Image (cartoon, helix red, strand yellow):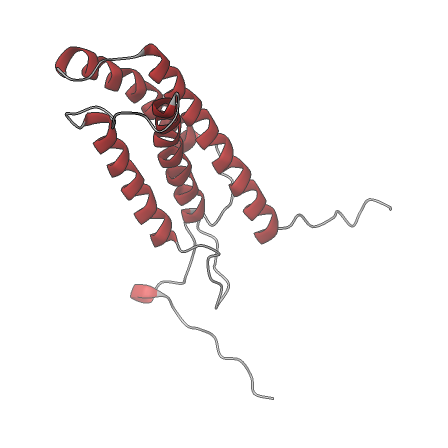
Length: 171
């Protein structure tokens, strides 16, 4: 048997550490590449902004009744979920030490953007109108995106970082 060699220093001579400063195990890979999540998050935000701010309204006739509400729900839920999942992946799926300010900021930005986008459509677009029910669908999408990201991140965190039972307590 041959002895394993140390992987040596990381990039620029530093030891390889994750975003929280913990030393990474050699050969450990992310379950989902961070770059893929970032690309998907940026693409979903681009589609989201295009859908909200294009000069013409949604296609007519609608696919089914209230199809525009489903588009609003998905249009806000997908970017929120992907941004939060990318942030969790960047943290190596560890929960933040001082609360989840990142998630709070993402939720607040998208919640405020829901209202602002409808006001802009109502006052500055001639072929579009602001709809309060669209804001409710947007907020529902934000809540569902946040909940989905939280469930996925918690599940991945449990698989990657299992809690070790306390050996001091009797069974």
